[in-house]
Image 1: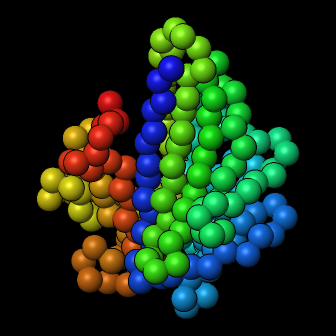
Image 2: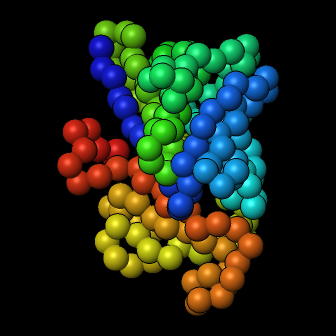
Image 3: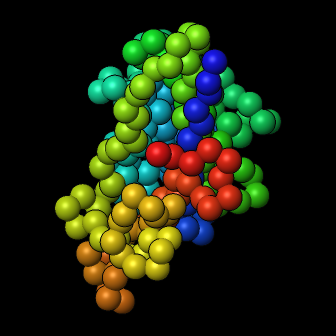
Length: 188
């Protein structure tokens, strides 16, 4: 049996969060009242404060979106990690965990994909969605120092039109981290 774990860390710059349970979505608030609103059926971020997201961070395995019909979730790590149920997609057990530490300013998406069979299963895994900045999204910087998103990058910083030249955009700057040079199992 092989377990593949990938993670995405979403940083909403300058924010710490708490997490009350609410039917339909899990709301994570930053120190300044900024919101991460996680859909408890799909696990995506709905909108957030200041239009940071517009249904961002869907998970798809072989073209099928992760979806928990019950919408029931649990928590771990002192209530700081939302655990969505295991769903079977294309013969793989798929689960999402979203962690928000009380002492830091970011959220981590952990996509756990487990092959319960003794045979290899090839899967195309995608994490996708729409940032609040929509068609005005600019990549300000990537892990190799430029602003071109490439398969070899580990992270990227995005913002909306205006901020990249010292102007003022309406949506917050976001950092997206999906891998790292010291990661045990890199994304292929």
